[in-house]
Image (cartoon, rainbow, N blue to C red; front, side, top):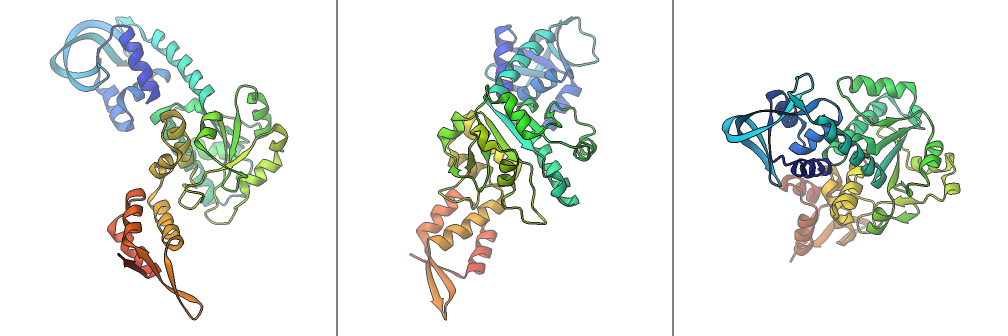
Length: 355
């Protein structure tokens, strides 16, 4: 959305408050699922669209934000400004001014927030985990396009096999992710003067706070998926492999009320937590909960119910958990789940509710 906000501001400064879009442009904007001006900015950055001045014509308003309207088809709103597909010949093409300013803004975003995914342990993964890892990185790109841009992501230690996987899955996607063969330490030494770097590690020494999220502007995430094997200390091994302590880079774990249970572990979800907290001033807890999957919430329910219940023990074994209705209502507000999932949890733990 930040790119979209910037484009709207630029359009208004240029005196453009009504902008026609053609069918091809509109189709791609709608299909993206992103905010309209955000995706329009991306299309300009990728040289897939032009902003033109032509004869005045009328259109109907299909979208409006902060006083700038997008027009399509026939209507009663006059405008001489158009967004055209890249192959269209404009009478007057004013794209370059917008493109250059957007490029400068994208560069400033990279200075504010940068994510680094390192693939040093790519070969340790099974084939299914490799595919999952590539899919998570694709989701990272889609996430960044909703808020920032591709250039806020760097992938280090990438080998040819990863590139083959990535290019096959994204064969129709134009992207500007910075994919590098150099290792994590080599890259971090280049940016250490312009970025405060932190490693996000579920086994990190320090608990991440909102102040930390605002203080650091580069976050390292291990490119590790352990769906078919256990690699609990993978990020710590990565940290030691490149001797990041020598660069005074700390390791932070993301916690939800002092526990990592229920904190999303997918790479794209971890990035989403940081983006929400840093760029949109959400609290860290709000950011975590808003980024949770259904599975994360269910895990959290199990944790909270067992932690705050009275346990009925027979022959040394817990046979029932007694919890208050007040706790159930509180958890439903904080970690909403379906009635079906709630009943399944209750059956699994043999929960008894008291008033």
